[in-house]
Amino acid sequence: MTSPDTRAYRRIPADERPPLLFPGYASTVQRAPAQPLEYLPHMLTELTGPLLGEGRVGPLDHDLTRQHVGEPQGQRIVVHGRVLDEDGRPVPRTLVEVWQANAGGRYRHVTDTWPSPLDPNFTGTGRALTDDQGRYEFVTIKPGAYPWRNHDNAWRPAHIHFSLFGRAFTQRLVTQMYFPDDPLFFQDPIFNSVPDPVARQRMVSRYDHGATQEQWALGFAFDIVLRGREQTPFEDEDDDE
Amino acid sequence: MSELAAGRPGGTTPSQTVGPYLSIGLTWDDGPYVVPEGTPGAFWIRGRLFDGTGAPVPDGMIETWQCDPDGRFDHPDDPRGAAPSSVPGFRGFGRSRTDAEGRWAVLTVRPGRVPDGTDGRQAPHLDVSVFARGLLDRVVTRLYLPDESNANAQDRVLNAVPAERRPTLVAAAGPDGLVFDIHLRGDDETVFFAI
Image 1 (cartoon, rainbow over the protein chains, first blue to last red):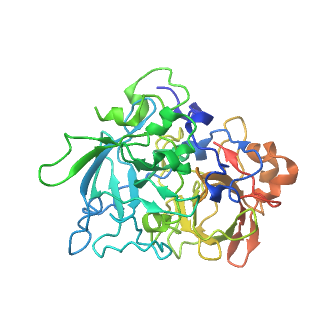
Image 2: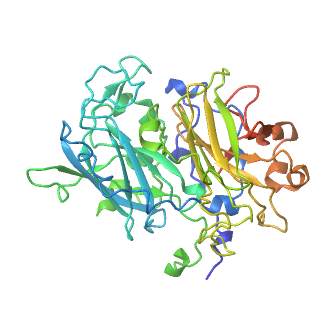
Image 3: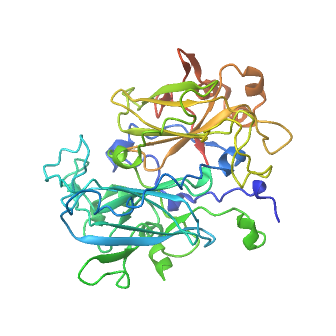
């Protein structure tokens, strides 16, 4: 088999990722580096990464509706999908972390002062491990939109934060999952910071009637695509290991 | 086909900011411990995260990744083979939120040297990711050790950085280990890498 150490990960084209400086999102102005980024070749430290999984995920960590004695307020949803790389290969046994606001758009965080009520039965954090096919599933409630002070009458579209490791330092990704047809997309600089509108749509989940459960929960599908290898001379499954 | 939800095949899901509330979802009690407390040779790396005005960033997160003291990774993509570390409990990975003063810390052991992909070896280093509100994507830097001047002088990555900016990548000696401040922007801006 080909030696995996020589296979760098594909660099993400500039129109498929947000720029660091995006003045429409005011906080970037003093936090984005001003100097150009230096080129880092992919060597061993970049081609490896933490393989976190077993032992870090408890049996109910994927169900955000069962972390308290009572049930949280809001519309119960099932969010499921696969973690894949750009070559379509599933990323198995990888840690997926999520956090989100409650149905009223409030985070259980000391600095969130939006006066929507806290839900005593909702923390808003979850973890899951993908299975051998890269599949994951969370049960949660649909988060609410919330105002923020970035611009005039600014409201964040409903979203769930996702964190993924993949299998290499280069693949580390933090993103947000949005909901289809959200009327707030047009004014949100975070969503719109991604230049390519096609790439932007990859952050939008799809209503999935097949995953919707009768008298119980709405289903949403959300696949997450991590960077693939720059060169894949042969699509040999053995190369995965 | 759930693949449809991700758009056309062959493109990645874009990065988005962690926002101001990352600590509810991403901080772990054991996050700062690359090695367990009491590990022989363990030391703290402490630092602060600053923005372009020199103000501390209180809602950020630092992650580190490194080889073990023997220069090995317990990872199948290391062509030398996955090698369980000789240091019991070594995870290679550290994760620390920043506090109200922008402070972060990880407890670790000295990384060894690993091949640099040509004929040489890299100087001991940690890869470092910075996440925060206002960062639409993580920024990545490297941390080198202050008492490795010979190895640092030979390091391929360090040498590609303009000499006047190289010091931002080298930690300083501290009271119980090393100190590594990170400046996102401004006169003391840390060197960040495109990966």
